[in-house]
Length: 421
Image (cartoon, rainbow, N blue to C red; front, side, top):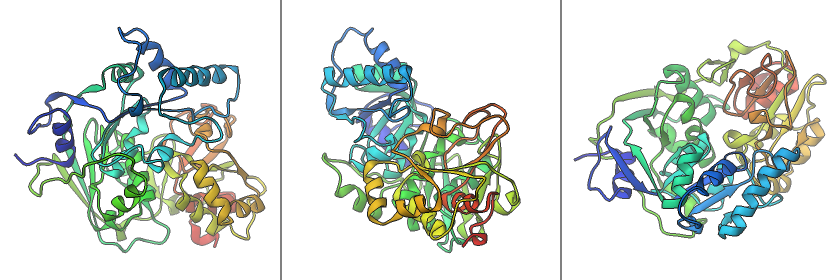
């Protein structure tokens, strides 16, 4: 029987020769992860099981990245709960403040997530690791607790959708963020509900790993169970220098069945901006021209990688942030931060008038480091723009890639980068 990459990974981890969409299976896990918000709830539920040890302390990752450095007593208590559990359970993949990064940037960088893995995380953007050719999906804290105890999780095998990108002649500044916003704009925030989104074609092959992570990161914004890109030479080049354990590469069969196939030419995809209050409200950046903003955020698990910072710095070099704008730049990990320092990017940001933060999810979820007041607008490279996502319920969030964000920070309104360079 022919199968997609998602079906092959799940079949192997369920000990089956084949699986079909809709089938209920129990699969062995390669990694279970949580952060400082979801981790404490999962730990509380884990403590109700008739076991006092996680199934494998080398296959659990606890990443305190949402409210760290701690912003108040409540967030300090959450971090303490995770810290004590990690120490008691001898969790291998735990990083303290000063070494931690945004989880979906950090774990691939550290070689913890690998091709062919089955990964669950108590965070909806766990689907990021599909960029490595892994099956990765978000779960609730209770499901994660069961995974911690048993090393297994149950799934309904998802139907698969294929997204084929033809050509490599991208419009200037267009990257992974624009491709995924364009897709979500076409199919809607529930257009891939509980389905696997498989991305392929010449356009995907041309993208760097940083851009591929961005695409898979936002699969959940279309309602997908997972996003996935088959591993190729670029993937292996990224993984081989980081992996500390064996992994297996999977590919979809040429005649595998897909519920639907979508085809695009990258030359037809312009820079995107998602208007409030859903990622599906994606439009050509030129349709957003003239919209005044108060804040710009460049960072997050979606666009906090080194290539994102380079793109922003290229536009900001020698220029100043508009006097009415607050620009917040957040590198995704300490290593990305150090690389940005080495390349002089941090100097460019500070000289332009930006705030540069330690790695944190902070403003993306309205936690801290950039909360919006009533009536304010933010342009952000994050992944969600729901009502109240970054602060007051009467604030607005627009989504874009780093080039549009940087250019708009200079102009004080949403603009195409060509207007700022």
